[in-house]
Amino acid sequence: MTVSDNTYLEAQYLLERAMGDRDVNSDVTMVPDGHEHMHLLIKQLPMPDLAPAGEIEYPTPMGAAGWQPQQLKVNFQGQVTLHETVRGHVRTFLEQIIKSPNRGRFNATIYRGTPDRHRGGFRIVDCFLTVEPTDRDWENRSQVTSISATMFGHYFATDKIPSNYVE
Image (tube, rainbow, N blue to C red; front, side, top):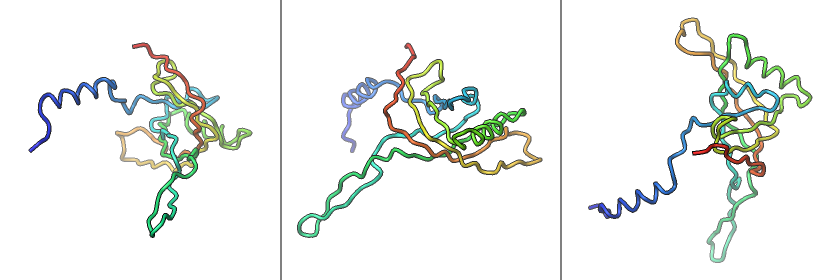
């Protein structure tokens, strides 16, 4: 038998509603510095968080053990998907960042929304992409061309951007 009743469920509902609506996964854009137009083509991106890199086990008396956190993990990696255009904007972007003085590295801003209407954002730095070969198929007439990559970068949670969204 359940431990809840209508009064308890209402209280839980009100607690949850007090925190506001759930975040929508699609409300995100990544804007690479110097390539601001690319935020329209970056479909999928990693959303880094600051947390310990892992655990350190240490011995305690009588053969027991304890845990403590490792150093913070400020590096991250994750999947990126970009939609190519018939003019080759993604390929041009990749070539430009490789030819830059940083040899493929770039900084970017991630917005929880779009650059002109967002609920805050943050900076990621010293990023680079390892790109997978693009899969093309003569029989596929129903899908846009996507370029998959893994992004490696750093996130320090020190350069947060305040929301500009008015409810």
